[in-house]
Length: 289
Image (cartoon, rainbow, N blue to C red; front, top):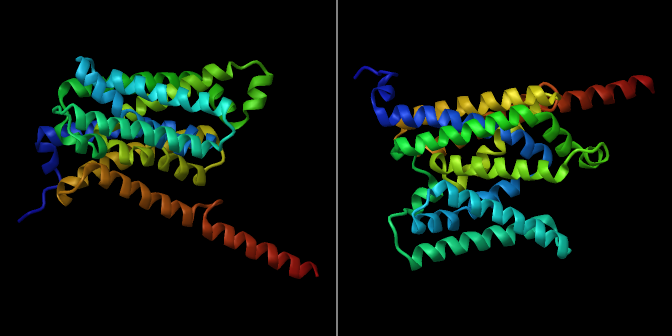
């Protein structure tokens, strides 16, 4: 049998899966830069799990699922911030309590009020079964996220890097925090269809973490992360056809492989480069003595 690399593009469902995954991967890659800089990887995990009760409630009320998921995500973020102000707990503890509670509420609602909503689809994604209406929704969400990031990336960068300086020079830090949380929630809703809530945190962290190892300039980091998010999503969805495996799993595994390669071979922050620099430093000290 002759191998035909264009076979996936002969099927409409695969074309949709590949191109939608590429778009969502690029958006997640951009946002992952801010998540990495701010140290919000656990926050991404929290919001991705917290949208489940919103999905169930929205379906029961006949509203778009994206609306319910977005509201639930913002509610969870607001609750985390409120608890932080009145209780002296570590951030990871507060986030863990809130997102597990929201996740449990979602599971409880699904069990009490049976509906066509497939829990497996929410948790693991179902990009191969995405509808045209969902695609239009993803296009709108992606456009909103891309435009907002392009317009406000410098302000968001300063707030993530040094919130005290941002406050001193008069930046609306509360507004910027709300914007970033809103973008994170919207992106989690978009990635819900692609990789599901279990893997969305990887798409929101891995491209940015990889780019962080490859450059010291934030603008370059954004470009690298966007490219990595998009190309790994494209290739992951493409190769999932030949592997007959999960699209989301293929994407995340590919992103992890690239991260490991960058971790080892990055020219400045990689293991080999740091080891070489350490050896040169020791050699210099020996010569000086």
